[in-house]
Length: 194
Image (cartoon, rainbow, N blue to C red; front, side, top):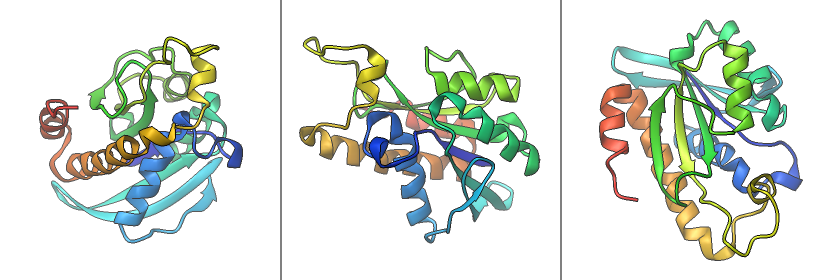
């Protein structure tokens, strides 16, 4: 399995809403023994061995370093090299259409205008990969700018507790997915209150 958290590289984007996928992958690396990341596939990748439904499973954590709009240029080569089918790819990404703090697991579907998802879909040649959508909410009514400006802003200090809680729950959701499979994970994750 490949768990790819989407974001943008560099200190300028480090704490932005668009980088919430990186936050979760970093949290998973901590929880799973501080697996070291190395540069490969135009990204940073770490290998962990996890107990799964059918024994120990090799799981790869991936943070594409291609910038968001070219995320597929990292995800697809990694999937090809490790011989992981699209159904074994989990993409963790920010989602404007969910309120801040809500998480949702789904398989397939459209991009919702998310350029990172669009790139992954184009490079994999299918929409049939797993997604963990992390709600960042829509811009407030007084926001001046486009949604693309909003996602590149840092979370407000007042949102810190909600973001921390969401990252923790997202890491737990991924662990449940790896341990119990997609169907059971979706049943539990998607009915949790926000």
